[in-house]
View: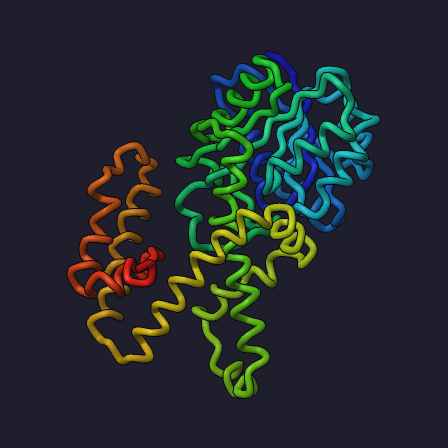
Length: 341
């Protein structure tokens, strides 16, 4: 049985779950390898918690030392720290080392890798699309790491152009060992999609809370806050402001594009509410619920290729019939033909 040494830089929920999944693999009777895991995090409590949970075998405070002579380095740190982590890793990486970058964005990370890491380092970006069981909990701390966090999910891999076939194969096998299926994606395409799934929730959380907290009624509003409000704004507690800032700024063009789409939808919904148009409001809610149900079914089953064109268009057809073409166009973000004539 081969002994493999792995470094995990960043011991939040993702990084610690990687360690727990590796320890789970070590206990399998059919295990072909045995993983020794060393971890580091800028927060000492995260290191202590991860070690107490059995996710890592040992802790090393120096990033340079933790990556020294490792077979694979997993970077799962908060996004605002990634650039400095790459700088600190540079002197410790062995020639031909493989870095599996699980940070939020891939484009900037590839640029930092090219600037700071030694030639011959193989960078493979990854985004964990996690076990659907954990889709709604919104808990990103070390204490909620799980060995099955990746089970039934997928790992989106975005290799750098310089990553060789052996490095990509290593990360592919590693991802499957964690419990995830593998899907490949171009780094530019990846960051465009992340603007929708990570950027927009962060923007809405910040914008909604700031608007309400600045309102004249905030003194009374905050007295009646419950889980619905907490779920909407939890990003402000779970994620450091520096990480949100960097994620939005480093991916600003993609994020702005999605903000524009959301603003069109909000404006249209606002108008039908102001007009007390019951049918239009109902159509919007029913359409959203219908699309949401299809998404949840596909997300739970992971059968994305089975989504047919008629399914994607079903909501648009329903909206057109219930609202009329003009309001349907507005809610779906299309330009009205009459405005162009």
